[in-house]
Amino acid sequence: MAEPTAARVCHALMAGSVLALALLLTLWLTLLAPPANPSMTAPALLVLVLPVLVPVRGLLHGRRYTAAWSSLLSVFYFSYGIAFLPDAPPVRWLALACTGLALVWFATSVLYVRFTRLPKPSPGQPAERRE
Image 1: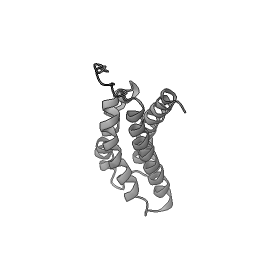
Image 2: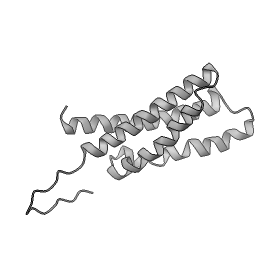
Image 3: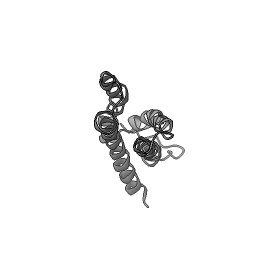
């Protein structure tokens, strides 16, 4: 696979996994397995869904810096999914989906940063700048 094609595939998977994770968490907390205490739904949505939405604009625009730092954010959601794996089967499947989406987000963001880096300049040539 050529690098520009690989970068486009990674970009699409990265953005798709972030949006799917935000949708999954929203559905999980509101419809599929809401918290036992209904007054905890809004704080849980703020704590879990809002951080996923912060890097969306940068990821959709293909910004390397956003992809790099958001890969660290994906580790939190990976851990969150792992923490709920021992629960009963309905929550277990949601946790497995959360873990999988976070893993795809992490892997594709790291690969996207790698595939979109500039080549090293040869000696004597000035380095190009990319925004």
